[in-house]
Amino acid sequence: MVKTKYNETETENFYDSEDGLYRSFWDSEGSLHWGYFENLALTESKEFLPACKRWNQYMLQRSGINNQSKVLDIGCGNGNAAIWLAEQTGCEVVGIDISQVRIDNARDKAKDYPELNLSFEKASATNLPLGDSEFTHVWSQATLYHVHDRTSALQEIHRVLKEQGIFIFDDLVTPVEEISDASRRYVYDRLLFEPTFSQESYLKTLSQLGLMALEVKDLSQHLHKSYELLSLLALPEYPDLNAAYIKMCEAIDKQELGWSFYVCEKVSDRLSWIYDTSDRESLENKYDAWSHLYDAELDKAYRISPIESARALNKVLCDKQASILDAGAGTGMVGEALANLGYSNITAVDLSSDMLEVARRKQVYTVLYQGDLEYPLNFAEPLSFDAIISVGVFTYGHVAPQALNNLFPILKSGGYFVLTVRVDYYEKNQILQEIIQELSWNLCERGEFKIFDTESMYAMVFEKK
Image 1 (tube, rainbow, N blue to C red):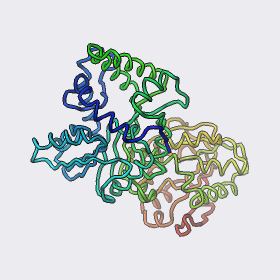
Image 2 (cartoon, rainbow, N blue to C red):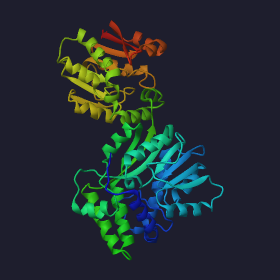
Image 3 (tube, one colour):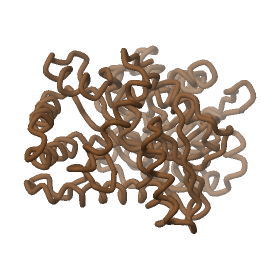
Image 4 (cartoon, rainbow, N blue to C red):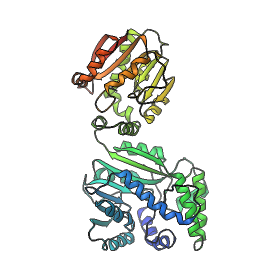
């Protein structure tokens, strides 16, 4: 949990009292977030507000919000984003904010849009006065760093989201553990919050709560440019703010402050979610999101599959220096099982870079490649490997059976291929069976075991002719 010495009352008072100040130079309409710049070399302050609008547009494009959506805007401020979202999409928007001044402003502004489905309520993100699974989307900009109990707020967001609902937000982060006195004074104390998550620890916390991050973006350079331009806007009337914003840029340069963006999906059943995938990009994003928890969640229920598959190869391949390709390596469970049996020349390939990063840290692979098995594997020459092992890769929503035609040529004659698949998938997939029969290899062994206590698996060992 991210702890803070500040409380919500202080934050509420801060924003109640500062609304007029920020309107005078930041945005006269009362919006209060940062900009997304097409050109980070821009130096004219007039480019700031267009960049803020561009950030709204970017988030909307990534959100999937449409006229059937019900959106919760956390930290809605003066209601500008909520009204804009409703105008752009026809969605329903409920806005909450800790500041009564801003909620009153939002309600007054909403009166000019009677045709839109809008409502605003003063509330804390840590105790939302809303029903379970009520929203298709939760939207938040430049807000959560102010919440005194961030983890409770994230739990509440998870609670009010529907299953497979989208949580899309940006927030300030603290990339390093130690910050300077200057950064504490001009950033954290001035804005009434404590050093917070790094981008990576935020990601881990979200995943643990069941909010799987499908997209993560480091926007720190855009934050830097925002405060460069804001310092210019503040200078004529507020030299103290000008100086503070310059210090914020220095904090960003020292990686003592950052800005990150996340698109998360509420997922309770990871396996159903991962199998229900229609395209390669979605599959890659899902495995990237799951990589931080994959081993911990599947250790007891699934690890028998890589262990049994490695044992199957061990029965026929005596040479512990043999070159082995782990095709669809994931987080490296198969590599670990092979290494435990004494194999030391193992190559990994996987679609997900984040899964591979977990695998890399296990130090069981000689080299790792990011690649899609459904396309030719350019990192390998024909007849490169003494053995190929692929565990749980050819299955629902994953790699198509035709990918065996990409793997077969890089296996040496006399080499072994271990193919581990779900029994139900194998028996129902006529294309897979046909390709297996067409390839020039002999079935040496077929073992059967169970994962998740009830799901049957085949571990088939083939020898290439």
